[in-house]
Length: 285
Ligand code: FES
Image (spheres, helix red, strand yellow):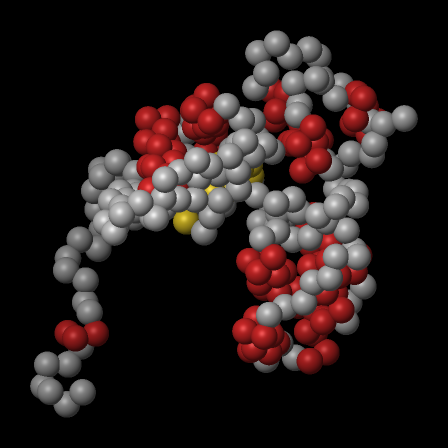
């Protein structure tokens, strides 16, 4: 017997990029067994794709999780934004806090959020399995989330995926052996006008080309090496000198745009923008 898998979308995208692919199962029932999945799909990708939880030594309900005192203060602030009878509406920011504290959204994090918000744990699991922003497995130091939804795909996100696979030697759903990079394929991240793009931890890098993507990866690898956070790095303990780290700033990469303005330049609102300092010039305010 295989294992129940309920998210064929990611599996299909994996399969689509495999040049040696065989015919993908076409009936809905074919999606329900792992044994029906083409061999090109990795076990890690399957774990990520499947909406199920399996107890492991690092992720099971008997591992205790409590929010830190600082995060409990933040939670108090968050809950003030919702009527008390609707406090379960705070499930997403609380899960985000839990993930930031614990490193990933473990079953214990979910259960603690359910307890605090007095909601059935299943309701929390439903939220976590719907949004890719919640990592149900530990991720590397840099989490690369490449968007491959239609606008990004039309702007060649396939080439960005390929560049990452070639440079790091991993596929979506996998982490590099040194624990530095985790690679995920995600749906629209809301930066379509700057497609193709990747989210790395909390930052967006946009207007990508395969070349700019690889330079970004190299810069991240160099920064990890310089700060001693990569495997085998000499790190900051070597001498007193602070390392020179040249990480590209988030935002458009090498396209000449500073934000999401038209590539050919502004066509409207071309005059000097008004700032608050220009509203009054009589010194009264
Ligand atoms: S389609 Fe990629 S960010 Fe929207």
